[in-house]
Amino acid sequence: MSEDIMTMTPLGSGQEVGRSCHLLTFRGTTLLLDCGIHPGYDGMAGLPFFDRVDPEQVDVLLITHFHLDHAASLPYFTERTGFKGRIFMTHPTKAVIRLLLGDYIRLTQMRKGASGDVSPDDVLYTEAELQSCVDKIELIDYHQTIDINLPSGLKFHALNAGHVLGAAMFFIEMGGRSVLYTGDYSMEEDRHLMAAELPKYHASPDVLIVEATYGVQVHASRAEREARFTGTIERIVTGGGRCLIPVFALGRAQELLLILDEYWQEHPHLQSIPIYYASKMASRA
Image (cartoon, rainbow, N blue to C red; front, top):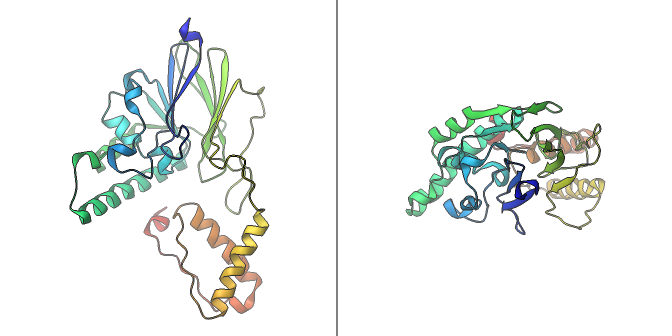
């Protein structure tokens, strides 16, 4: 029977970077895994291919973390389609999504307003729709199991994925099979986040769905990257220059500030040189 075959359909991020969104169906149960936008396109063009799914058939929607390419089309899907299912994410993800998507709405309006070229397709959702979406979100803690009352016996729990505050991977069980799904993850501990964890109390999942943006690339070690970063900054500021560092306001900014604070503490000749960060978003978060 067709329902005994597990199917996974990328509605985004299939052989591309951006708009992560995957449709998983098995034994009468349908899940949507992440709900992002494509950063290279505006408005409707940046959405996942929602025309390939019947939103009313989606039972559960799981969001791994708050980055736009994994979460920014969520209000569109919950407020402008027939979706009636349940939405789960961790508490930090929900808290930051409200800030980040509110900022996304404002930046989109500013950019389109400046160009004088605003069409209905550019406005994916309003502030009111964003708040309505956020109100529907249910929380899940790491290692908490959610058991959904469905014939397939769907249940899932969240594991820490590293990467950013609140990022999760989901261990999903349904119809006697298991799936481990993760978006971005980091196996390297840094100054403000633990490394991703592996499932400890289960056999290996039957299916692993994992983001692989960097493929088989081998990166320099963390120590090498930090030494290059701090060494470059020291050379510039001791020579009388100034460093402007464009960086993501949430996650990356905090990590770089901690690296610089540690380096400044270890090098007294730098301590008269101030470090500033200018981000209302980072301050609110």
